[in-house]
Length: 257
Image (cartoon, rainbow, N blue to C red; front, side, top):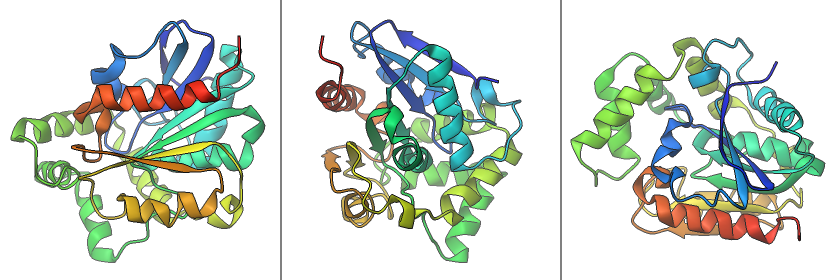
């Protein structure tokens, strides 16, 4: 079984990109036209329960998603590849670093959840739970993750993606994944090439100071970049800047030809 995915580009460097909690990989569409398709081939991989993988059953946890990515890479003929996680799938690419480091060239984590998960009080957890059924809660979340800087149309697009690209039962499982899983003890000291990207206007738990206490504490070779004038979703808010940062970093770990 190979999870749903879309290929973009035809270059020799393979990259698997993962979706976030709110939507499938269509979140990346604003940046696709800027990607270097001569150097890279991007596989936009939808986790089970999302997009092209919406009808694929599963346990909906980080280890399953990491294994699915390795299986997809094998299917595509990639012995080693780059991994790009976004928000909750920062946890997935960190799983790749911990359990499949021999398959990884580099790892990029955008506005990510770390191996420690995000522990939160019941009130905050209940708000995320509310977004599963309450449209206004989704709009409020879209506003929070961009510090209230963007238009109502932004919130409406995020709502549409949340309702059209996700299986509600899977989404509920993934909420437990990124708030209750914790494999930080396994991640500590793993010397993987990891670039962590933070948005200047992201929300609590995803800001630079939060990421320095997790990814940069766990991984001695991790680096951090802050994208100015962006919130949680730079692939939509500042797509060219994100593409530039990503491809410059991955190029450092590309095969020499």
